[in-house]
Length: 291
Image 1 (cartoon, helix red, strand yellow):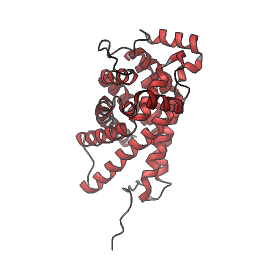
Image 2 (cartoon, helix red, strand yellow; image 1 turned 30 degrees about the vertical axis):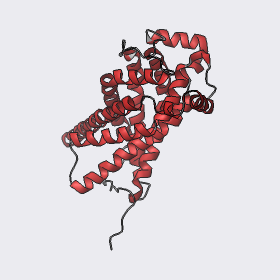
Image 3 (tube, helix red, strand yellow; image 1 turned 45 degrees about the vertical axis):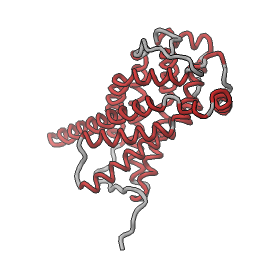
Image 4 (cartoon, one colour; image 1 turned 180 degrees about the vertical axis):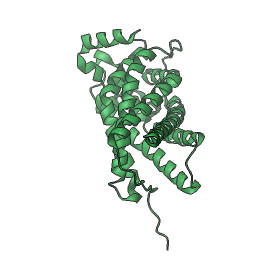
């Protein structure tokens, strides 16, 4: 009788694990994918942010949808590089530690560790981006200077706990769903996946994870854009205030643009990520053949 395994399994090759190579390849692939996705989908993210900070029936404005992009890219590039740079070698190491049928736990753990490491850059970047998206500042340098002057360094990390509450589960779940579907598909197809297949799986993983984490994203956005007003005194108070003043539906504000943005973003990100990793792998192979 065949024993069914609870998760997709993957057998690692016999090639020795090279941490430095996995780190460098992850940094290059992550930076490339992150910058392309952010540039293409920034207007949708801006609309999502403005929807989430709108109270009651207040209107949102449609101008300046690329407001803050340049400054945001300055943070997205290193953040994406750090995330994938940490995720890839951690994943590969854990896949050699966990039993073959528990590969999902390796992906979950690696995603959470990568997210925690990159959060030190991602949070200030997100704070500056969202305040520019909501019209509080016109340039990234000006935003950083005034936030620090008014709120101190802690102002750049406004909503840090809610960011971790949203992004650590998001990173872990999204990459786990993507990797597990990809492994299962490869086993069923008995071949490597092509770029469109990687993109479709990435879109599905992104959209599902984005929908699940929308309530956390709403709270994170409210905490980050409040500035020195201190309307909310933490995650719990933010949740209670939103529920009391706006009702449960407010926790799903922006879910449409968020699913669209992250779904398309997941498609582009994972498609470019896998293609860049493949190109780097082929380059290593070619260099090895010449030496």
